[in-house]
Amino acid sequence: MGKGNSTTDNFFAVQKEKSRVKTLIVTEFFKAYFPIINAQFKQDIWYIDLFCGPGYYDDGSASTPIKLLDTIDAFKDDAVRNRLKIVFNDHNKEYIEKLRQYVKTHPVYSRLKYQPQIRNLKASEINLSEYTKGNHPIFSFVDPWGYKDVSVSQVWDLVKNQGSDCVLFFNSDRILQDISKPSNEEDFRKIFGNLFDDAKAIQMDSSMSQRRKAEAFLKLFSQNLYLTVKEEYDNRFKLFVLPFYVEADDKEKTSHYIVFISKAHKAIQEMRKAMIKQGNSISAELGYDSKDDMQISLLNRDDDSSNSIIQTIKAIFSKHPQCYDKKYTVAKLSELMDRYEMSTTYKVLPYSLAEVKSAVELLHQRGCVKVVLPEGRRVNKLITYDRELYITRKIEEI
Image 1 (tube, helix red, strand yellow):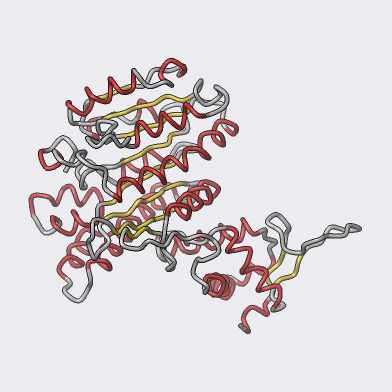
Image 2 (cartoon, rainbow, N blue to C red; image 1 turned 180 degrees about the vertical axis):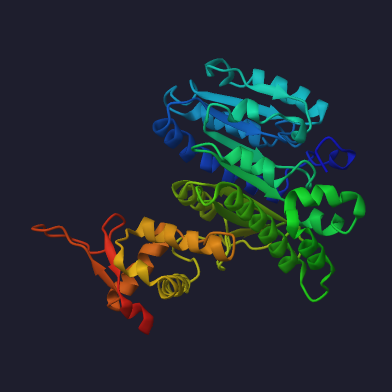
């Protein structure tokens, strides 16, 4: 349901752990995203929040809109403030009236070249072509209470422009509750498309845990998005989907995913950094569990990450032997792996560039990497982030 419905009346009473983590991840990405986009593109930049809420929780905690403004206020120069166009929307009129006052009294308000647009519509009623015309970069935040007014077509509209990325809060818990209700079929077909019957079958499968059902729902949404873009644009776009699961509120299940969607692998790398910083999972997924006090870092991530990365590289090169003839950097190898994962599992891998680099170093020790060294120059380190290298066929012996 959208935030304009009565079921959300107490949502903004106290900031819950999943909301806190979600806002931290999004605002952490803001800090990297806006300066990069500002440097790369000449057009003005849109920020669009389709379900913005009132700006503050009743306990005084700032929600994403205010945190966004705080981030923009903290930039040292006016470059981003002079080019950023902000749209805050929510169907709940009371929320919008509160947010309008908070925005006008925020310290950054007078420093913005463009006053924020504050709208009171259903997300599905907003004409996104107002913002997508001119091929402006768009950063969008889609955070519904449940699943109403969310669709694959809407998400693609938000990311199809150059430099555009979207964060979607995917509520698997609400989907699990409602997908079998005939009255909601139209809503779910907008999310799952031709895979809707598969989604219904997942809900009915008593052998699957709620956690596995949540993963399966997300995979079907991502698959529908991936195949829709592939069919419509004939592989002219490379789509990447990076999920972050959230276990919170003392539930023994994954109730939500924070899903980052982009066409740019560099953006995926930046969001991975933000997710790793706020996560506490040491599994093969990025995530946060409020029942686990351990905060992860690159020093205590899954010890087997290098071997997992190596097995992925081995699988790719075994299936596509032409890859042996190409030169790679660590970043290009990471992108190759993520493109492979998107074509098979419809999501990218959780590993940072530092972890990919560690795996390449291990492969080099095993004789599976040939480094391209600069002629006539001594080097201190063989494996660096930007040095070119080949993967050799010896990897097939591992």
